[in-house]
Amino acid sequence: MSKGRSTRKIKLSLVLMAISVNGLFAARAVNQELPEGKGVEIARNKCLSCHEADLIKQQRLSRQGWTREVEKMIRWGAPVTETEKEALIEYLAVSFGTKPSEANPSPTTNESRGKEIFENKCVVCHEADLTHQQRLSRQGWTREVEKMIRWGAIVTDDEKELLIDYLFKNYGPKR
Image 1: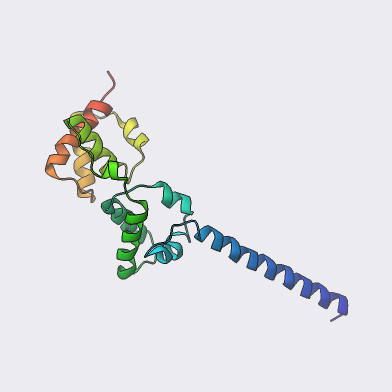
Image 2: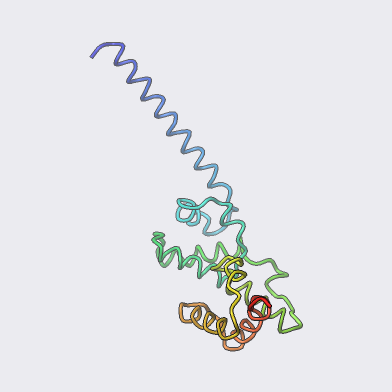
């Protein structure tokens, strides 16, 4: 091998190493975007391999909401052990849980209670625009809510009726 060719290989190797090191520092900087806390390393290692920190930070879910979200990600292939799962859910709920005013609202009407159920139970998995587009009858919303319950939505019998009322009143057929 000639001296010129050898020098080019060394330079190329140095450039590739610099790119790799720079990539590691960039990845580390992204990882630092999550707030410190017990479980942050699990979130960095398991969540940020697919998602940016902003996606996690913008969600404000209850502990139950984060549990569903983590379990969904595990079903979709996230390599999270059972021990890591509990620590991850706790970290996410503490760091990105609902705001205190949202966690304990004091609705005074069935309408506001139905809206609260919708926001806490439906929008956790679905974008609100999916609901806005459907415009179902009361019977249609009943079937839809019952289907979601069969598929794992955690909605009590009392919540179910309030939710159906809210959905029908706000997203029923256009008149």
